[in-house]
Length: 471
Image 1: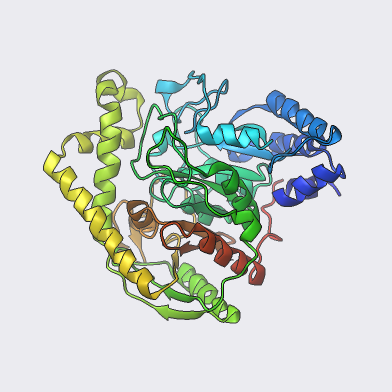
Image 2: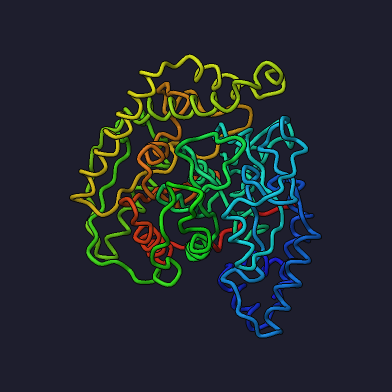
């Protein structure tokens, strides 16, 4: 097996190989490091690299195998952490000059859990400032580039994570999602990413920048089963987060149990999206029809979730305004214009507007509650367009129709508003070779079915044989 083949192995295969010492964690880690040194200068997926730490962690992982110790689920597997999450002793900037030299003294709970499971931390992945937009660029580390075409966006805000997974330099990549920030870059980069039910992965200690009330942590990988394995490690209640959920069934152990006789509804609007690019719509429709091979029934539906857009804007602007209002005078000229604009918008909102937003959130959830009385899964495109060129935060028009700032990712943020589990899975490529993503949404707490359906689709429509090429 050559080094490139090692880099593109599934994390599950890596774990098995390490356990049997057919490949050591140190061999895998060195292969990943060598590829990072080649590829990362091109795509800028990692913003902070921790090679010395990775080598030490890989060495310890191999020692645990040789000593016959009980192995964690991720023993020896190279993993990346998004730069919005605190990591003890590793620089955490949130993509902002405000925190350019910030080195936390603690780990987020999920980081601690990943470490305890034996992962090898390769570094931090790039993000827009405070994760505030769905492209990945900031004043500290600059622009991340799509591995399939470096002139195109990675999406965001987990753009660095998704690009790293795509490029074979992060078998497991942690992401966070406040409006599509796992699913959007997963779609644009051609990997699988899941945002679990809100509360499934605890948020503690509280981040310096909360950035989104509706944000949650999840996993990104080239294989569905790998993402499930990573999520198994991160999930579970923590007393410091009152919204966190108790650990439920193992996703990894049950992901191959394909559900029977599911009823799937699919929607290409949600009452929000004004237009979907033709290649995207055609690819997702073909993908939906593949579910008939699994004896699932499919039916076109018409949901009306327009209020979710207002709720999303209100929650995202007021939370970031709360966290940054006192810093605005000193830092305004060093913050990205989009962050400043969101803070000022949030400061203009009244308490009655916020109360109305909470009611709008409840009404949006009720729409999905009624939907899931009749259907088991909702399918949509993940994004309305494939990856677009750098220099914009999104297209102003789609198929000739003027769209809002969030119009190109209109399918993702409603499920942050509702807190439902949602994943993006590759379902095709454009004629220009850009990935297209399909979104799979499930009932609250039913993360397992989302993963099982994704795994079933992966089996009938695999994509992992396609890899971006670098000179």
